[in-house]
Image (cartoon, rainbow, N blue to C red; front, side, top):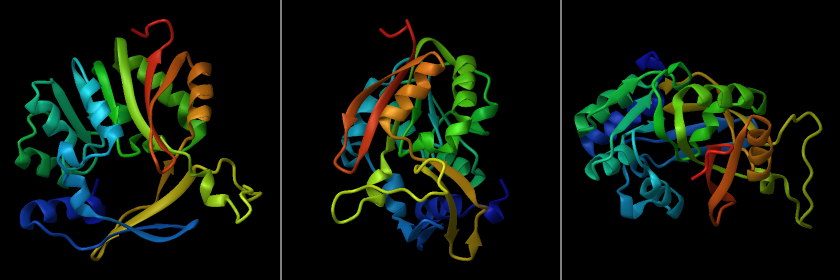
Length: 240
């Protein structure tokens, strides 16, 4: 990734260096512009939501932290003695993680990895990198390659159907929408505008169905207050 088109990486690097950052703006054709509070990307274990704490507590064996950002999850696991590798496509995030003391960091696309891991973490809506439901079978085929026998994927996502709910509680989706959780985003930090990217919010029942079709089982571990959930994904017939 070109650092001139890496708004999140620049925001993370600025906050690490100075303890403050400007606005990290998020744009989508479906919503009003939003902001990501950069300090939340640096939160300590005790400040994390229940779903993230639960996932970190369940991590075992060789662990991959996908889209690791500032490395906050990797640092918790590293301090606990877990063999953790952080991966991110952002060169500025990777540099920041190294400066913060994360020992094993890869600047790489998740879908280009070849090593096997016992635990794969995709937190903070991390499974969103799949982008669309159409890509989910490819995602599970990639898990076949990099998830060790008996391994687990711990991921969180959200059911955003509430966005389309009217005052009477009825949900009506736009006619031209393939799946309501498929979004397109652009991020901006200061004068840095990133490239548009697809992002997936997948409801638990849809995730269960697609996982089953591809030989995996999904167990919902935590249901949050904001339509979010933590799921554990394992290969069928291998769940411990």
